[in-house]
Structure formats: C-alpha cells, structure tokens
Image (cartoon, rainbow, N blue to C red; front, side, top):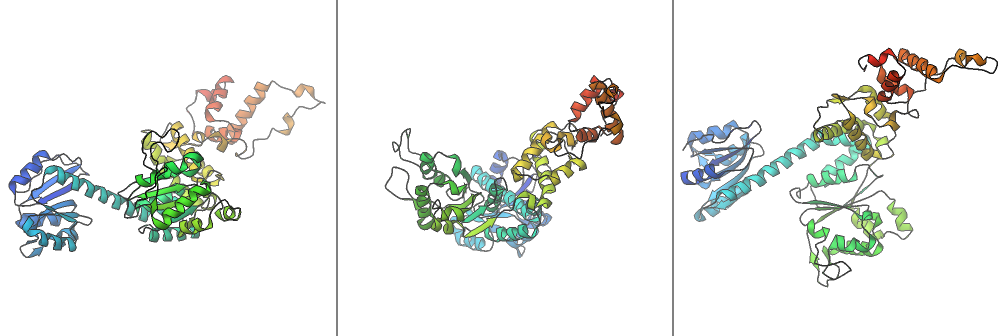
Length: 474
C-alpha cells in the first residue's frame, strides 16, 4: 500500500504522514480518519518515504520505530530538517520502548505503544496541529503584530524586549496603565508566548465583583458557606490550573482578599470559602491596575508586601496619545476584525478619516479606538471607511476646521433692515458656498459644516438644489 491521497486536498490542509509497514493499521486509519482540514499520507518505507519527507510541509508524522533509519539515513534528522515545526510521534512495540525513548531524547515528541486506535491518533494530531498554530501565531506576533499594535517608541520597544524575555517564564507580572491602554491584550500575548499557551487564559475584573463574593469567585466555596451557596463551587484559580489567571484592577481587592492572594503567591496554596483543607494549583498570575498602587500603599488601601510579590516584573503601558505610531496598525487590525465579523469587504480607511484618528486625544485609549472602528465599519457602505462613517463627536464642529464665515456684506444691520433674508435662502447660499470652497466634495463640505453627509444630502433635497440629484462625490 504505497502513498496515496485518499482525502480531498484542500489548499491549506495540514499534512499528516504515517510511516509504518502495518497495512492493517493504515487501512483502519484511512477508513475512519475524520480530522478536518488534514491531508492524510502514508508509506511503507524505502525511497518513497524519503521522497515524501524531502518534499516538506508535513505537520505531523507517526513513525514506526522500525523506520528510524532508511538506507543509512537518520529519518528523524531528515524529517526535522526538511519539515520545520513537524511533530513526530513514535509507534513502538513493548520491546522497542528503549529505542523510542532514545528517539524522544533526539527530538521526537513522544511515543505510543501499539496497538493504537484511530481516535488516539486523531487526538494526538489535533493537539499537535493546535500547537503548530500557536507557534505560527507567536512568530507572527513577534515579527509583525506586536510592534504594529503596541508602537515603536523607545518606551514601547523597551516594554517589548522585556515582554519577549519574560513571557516564556512563570514569573508573576504587574501591568499598569490608564484604562483602555491594552493591559488585557498584553497579558494575553504573554500567555500566548508562554509554555502554558495550550491551557486556559482566565481573566477577571476584580472591581466588577461584589465585595462579599470576591473570595468565593476567586478561590471557590463550599456548599452552604454563604447565602445562596447551594453546591460546592470551583473558583477561578482552579479553573485556570496549568494556565494563566489575569487579575484586572487588582487594586480594587479588599485587604482581606489581598491577604489570601499574598498567601497563594507565597505558598501556592489556598482554601475555598467555608473549607479548612488547603488546595494547590499551578497557576501563573498576571495582575493589572489603572491606579497608583504606591499611593494606595501610603493610604493603607493596598499591602506593600503584595505589591512586591505581584511586581516581580512591572510593565507600564503609556496612553495611546503618547504612542501615535501604533494607531495605523491598530486601525488595520480593528478594521479587519470587524469587517470579518460583519461580513463586509472593507479594504481600508480614507486618508482624511485616518488623519482625524491620528490627531484625536483618545481619553479612552485603545478601547475607545476599537469602539470607533466598530462604529465606522457598521456604517461603512463601500470598500473604504469614510470621514462620515466616524462618530459625530470626532467630526462635529468642535473638532472640524474653522467654519466658513458669513461674508461681511451679507450681515444684516439696524441701518439696513432690508438686508434680512429668509433663513432657508441664507442656508442655501451658505451650503452652495461651502460646496464651491470644497470643490464639490460633499464629504469635506459636510465635515466643514459640522454635519453628516446624509444630513447634507437631505438639506440639498429640501432646498431644491441641483446637487441633490447628482451622484455622491467623495
């Protein structure tokens, strides 16, 4: 049974290669394989196997210990050299376990003892492909996204260097910065770059939980330990076991809860509310705050010893107004995100609209910019976001260039009462003048007038102006 393709080959299908001489095993796998977006291949050894491995692009390989070498070639070395990122699982008999263990030491991921079933192989392949996707995401984050999204100022480059060094460790981290600066986003990146990236990232806003329920929410509770507790409950620490727990607004925790958190950081143990026995979990803690914790310490609202336990590494994110170089990258990211969600083909943003976004102050930081882009994508009717698609508070009179001034000779005076003309006529002349100055660009004229383009078109129609029947200008 030589190499054949028995599945429909999708352009982005991941290749899974079985190199084993057991025809019965391979037939069972090919008959029952159901893992989507995979391209299944097989070989019984010889030059055919070497050719397949040399072609590259294999993501997962199930390799019999009988074929660790073929024609004096080290198959492990060949597979890894020609297929970067490949995960290799050994298929071994009980008598070959020592050989399989040695192969794992040389780079195979792990080994399985025969007989094996299709569900087990699918499960191993699924996990391997998930790890591969995470690695690709990490490379993309490192090479492109991080600097685009966080900015390339000196301060942000220093933060990025620290982030990339510390993320793979288990060190506790504290992230501070104004609300909306991307603290949870950065915490998620840290988790993605760590060895815990296959486990849960659990985020909780400590300030959003009622004070009387915070301990139960974080550490869990025993049935009957408080009013409404009708069953034993796992806390977020247990839910995040083997993964990362992100404690946002950690400065809002009560002093009593701070003591429990400190104890966990020191002993790696905690107790559910209402229980007396200790529990332990393997959790990495990343905390965040928009408050000045030093001031909170001086006022007795935050424990100094907890602060030092949390801030083994401390990142302070500057506000968006201090890293404007990140705005274009953030715009692209959010446009892509919301265009996909709303199934729209939006290619980008008009230059004058981007110029407004580049100069705005963003009191709400990245979160506010994301909301602006979601608003604009929702209103966008073409393939580019236009100025009129932005929220009115960005394009209204307080943000627009100076309004067109009424010519002095048209101002009515007490000495010349006949100079008063109907308001509709005045508005008509004013809009006509605005269009002349803006060279018939309706979007720009609407912005200069402090109204939306749809309002401008409605006024043109109401005033009986010829512009209302023309095709919209850009």
